[in-house]
Image (cartoon, rainbow, N blue to C red):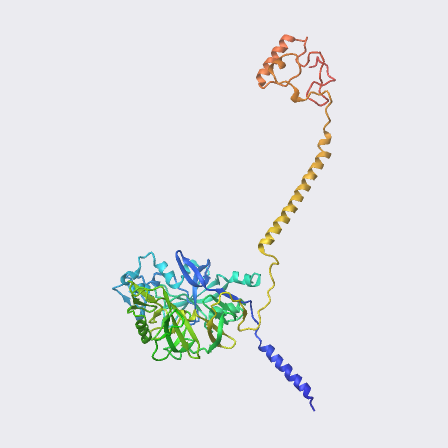
Length: 569
């Protein structure tokens, strides 16, 4: 008969082991990348996640997107602004969506960026500023000819003028974020991934930016996870940062509304991962307490994607919006709408209520009555779709909507989440793991700051160097006293110092005190010969002094030897 207590213990132990096996360990510390402005060309700021690609690195601002699995890197080419001569056919695309329009010199497709469509024939550029417009539109671009690590893949995308390539890359802020979080240097900061690009001479696939693919099948996140550079492939996104493998729990307010990922290929009208029904949409001035005006007659289903820079709403909503603000539509483009009369200084609010009860307020600058009597136009980020989105008649809640919420993907639970963003800038950051259980501990590289280490090292090194120099000088001094100096004999007390001797010419030619030669050696020799001729043997040959005594040099000196007769001289 079995003991019930042993069965209970066995069952509890088995449950504990199952929990231990299913626990997922984080592969790396949290990585919160800032969403900031970078200057890819002088005078232009491009917002996004800074990325550096190629050898040497080329900078690009990536916009997080749920539209593609492979990150899209624009190629630096004049086709990014469709500046192709009318008579050029070598690089002309052959599909119908890129048919050449001879009247403008552009390649027409479903739509073009509004900034180029507005200028009409002048949209072709002047041949010098196309690279500036390319960076302005797409957040930078990439030239594979400048990269020694570029590898081209001949696989062509379906129904698109694009292909894949492989190159080395890194997040520009990866090293600084890692060291600030862990006080240590990362094992690696570069990775190699496959990217999507346009074929030379082809248009840019209707993408409105350099897109960072954040889908569940993201090749970029997979490369980072394989290299153990991120905790997991889960992430949270706000208007200020992209947290890979982590979430800031203080960044959101209210309850989370979850969305299971949808198959993008089931419904061609909504080819997106997050679909949400918009139950209500109102517009009101910024002042609180004012009731909003309804823009919808019936609900609609829209895609949620931070990679689309604008809103795509049904035509009846856009028409109702124009009536409420008392402005006629001047022009409607794929990525924005221009209303008559100038913009005011006020800010209006679009309030979306999606299925589940979540309400999101989207601010639109330029509203109010101040601009009703001004010339010009009021630009509102509401477009028709097509270029930069999912196509015509595909409603999208793009970046103006996602900037007001916290967007989350939990890879462990396989679900998306949306919650309102906490606008309090004084809140305390609370970063927790997402898609894994706990962050690994990282050993600090240094115990002190780099500045302190450099200062202490300089002081210690200087002190040791000074001691070594002092010991070397003392050793040479002692060696000199015991060696060379000991061989010199001290002079007698009656020795006349050289500085006491007269250097005058008169004292040299008279029989006075012994003097050194005058400044001119020729004149001295002439005077000596004259003196020898006049004096003869009575006064010697010039080596006697007044009292008739001879000064002899010591043995080995330069005077006459003492043991040799004068006649021998």
